[in-house]
Image (tube, rainbow, N blue to C red; front, side, top):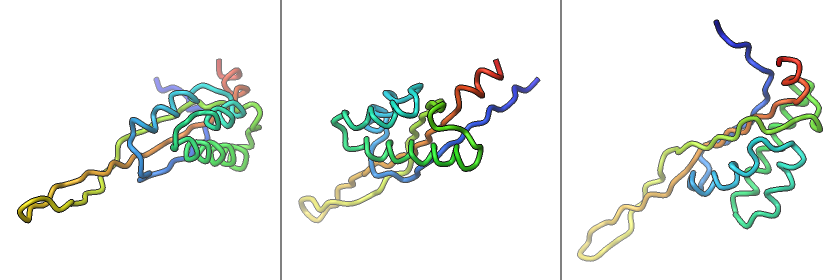
Length: 123
């Protein structure tokens, strides 16, 4: 027996030029927070990736209001997932004509927004 899928709006970003570990520091803090709190929290964190996460939260909220008609004030972050993506591969010249590989990490981010009212009705 399958569970019914809850109404959830989400936003994703691919090939973000930051490591997944650094991005998870921010997404772990906002997971489960309300929409307003998820916008305020990254402003006070000292990480460069906070701006990207707050932009995704704004995008997910816009998707929730336009596609599903959910109220932003009743929304919370139900899913905040960061996955490793491909590496940008570069080569740095080294001694005696050799090349040394440099791997620049990228990641994918998925932010899911759900409404508290929908969650109460399903329970």
